[in-house]
Image (tube, rainbow, N blue to C red):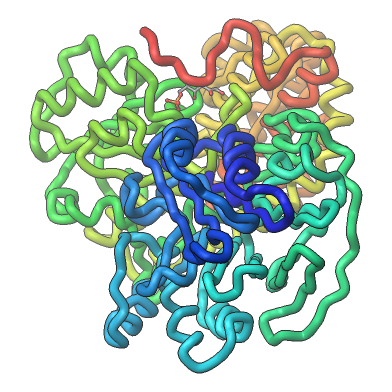
Length: 612
Ligand code: F6R
């Protein structure tokens, strides 16, 4: 994920900025860059960029003599335009006087860019971010720097964390926040701005958290905070009592918990700028070049592993029901050694968080050899699978550090929903259906929030059941894959034996296991198979088995059947997996933590499985 660092004070800026960039590396990035305003005599903005590691940028900087006490820097995680030097931040205006680093996405950048081009501006990159530098340049023709920044911000739609320099204002930095975190470290005669506390903690523990809609003007003497209407805002200086690792975890004890709680945001990021409500359509830029081919496909094969495989299974239900295309989901490790029958009308879709899983890569290469259209739903920009597939959609979930996949999974489900709408609308799906799905999808982040707020109750349930050695997790239709995913989570994080099963299959074998020492969990939202699930629960109850249920809020019947219930909000049946999986992630987490396990690095597992 992109990272911002800015420095203004008495020290040389470049080494501080480089150090900050290194501390932001853990977030994942594909390129890095720096701008420093040179001191009197050489007053110009020195900007250096490098694709790849910060070490490459460091090497470039070491060959220059960059002297200056104010600068900004950035690690980029590509969204608009591929990872390369020209797309890397900082971005400059036409004159090279204004330098900008940006986190977030400017949704209306195309309109603004077109207008700026008409006004004579020349753009050097394919990014949305560059327009900010040119907009400020445009306003600076008529007003001062500060006012020009405020006027520019008024025109931006989307999200931003911004840090801005102007060569003619060498003692000022302006920063702004809307939907993308930014904090200001307050040191002794120095200020450090960063998108992440981990780049600040080694300099100061005094911080000011900027809120959405706030802008700060910083000099080495002090700072003032205002809103975009230039109204002054009083800010409190808080004390940060985190160490480096805690800072990376945002103060939470584990990456897994942090990433679980990031899901409202990561789901939003997966859909940001991709929903076109007016025509009930999903806009998937990464598929633009293959739109025609996609119109002609008559079969989809999804290849993936582990959690990504379960996302694929949910995708199968969605795509068949709403896009009307036959779908098969295969473990990539099986697909690669079978003799799959493929042709040009088959699309093979790889789903992978890392984009490096060896089996998924091999499956995609095999499909490519056989002439299928290959696509990727990938989180890691520029990863091998992303490069090997013909086209694809990035998740934009940000790096996932916990070994257990959480936010990548819900983000994969979000992309699969968008893909279903996209392919469905290319075919028979009505405008109204497309609009209804998208409208409900947009509500999901807030609905996830309401489930996360039940963390304490979910923890209580986890502690109540933590000593059972075996579990059966069940669901049906859209929530059968969720039962499987929940079972995988508790296996890998809490080392509890747990079988995930389609609830209709229970009577064909697993019910023999049930007694008072073998609890079951049912994912049983109010959907088209609700009654069937209830029958299954009654059979378990009749055999003395304890039951935890994940049910829809307002369901009164469920309490009669289950010993413990976790409620999720109501949504469309196809979207319930995005909600029902959250309590299962938390149950696994709390059971694992209560047993003292390292939930971020479970034994025997690796985050990226690059070997067979
Ligand atoms: C489980 C988990 C793994 C991965 C699997 C595929 O929590 O993280 O099962 O989902 O190894 O990895 P990616 O998605 O990187 O291909």
